[in-house]
Amino acid sequence: MSSSNTQSNSELKSRLQNLKMEAASSMNVNLKQGYNGDITSREAGSVGGEMVKRMIAYAQQNMDKSGGNMMK
Image (cartoon, rainbow, N blue to C red; front, side):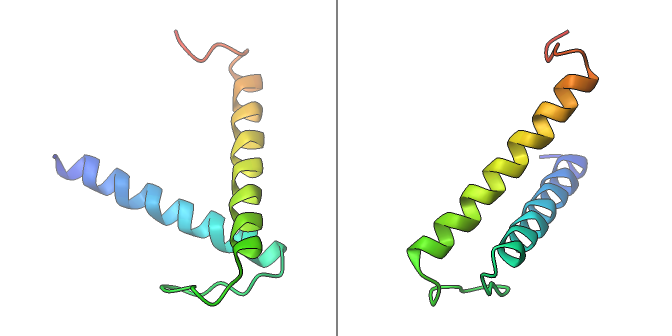
């Protein structure tokens, strides 16, 4: 694996972590770095669902900008 791929992967992980923390905050779920086994399944599912909702909205916005053509 090249260093550029590693850098991209670590950047993506960081972005997903930030998205998770923002989603949790907006849902009033107290997430912390590391272990979060003290939150309920419902809270964890709510955070995950909010993340998916935001990722879909982001993809739709970007598809609108590209004219709906994902493959060129």
